[in-house]
Image (cartoon, rainbow, N blue to C red; front, side, top):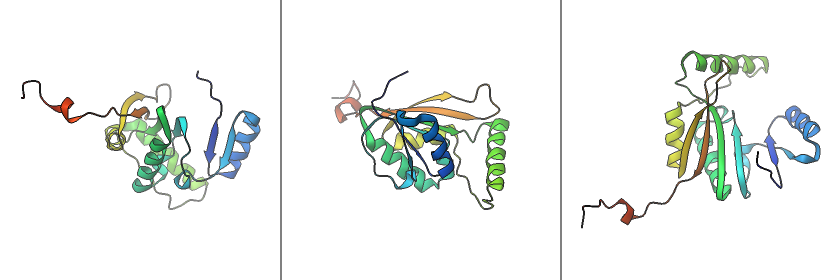
Length: 165
């Protein structure tokens, strides 16, 4: 696995932040913050795991855009999210999220899931090259791991058909 000079974790939940700080000690900086409100610093890798579906579609776009803008020239954005086209395995994701919302007394919690192709289209619309890898094997859940990098810029000359001219 790659080695990083600095690792930063972000979570909005105080208990999760406390547990992460205890577990990681000085190996990572753990911030109690809302990813929707952060100003991006520069990063080689950004990991967003199982949280975008908890944000409205507009908030998802803002977080993805901020993450993309924070990447270094060869940076990588890694996102894991549920695939709403995942059949019974997606039903397991939905049920799990609804049960968690009930336990946490978030009766009106809404979820904003997308299919793998919808996620891919969203990432591409933000200038990202998309590689999607199934990520639910060995689990009852339908999730996809997306590896995203800055899409190569295609010049007008590159788009001109070879026979034109």
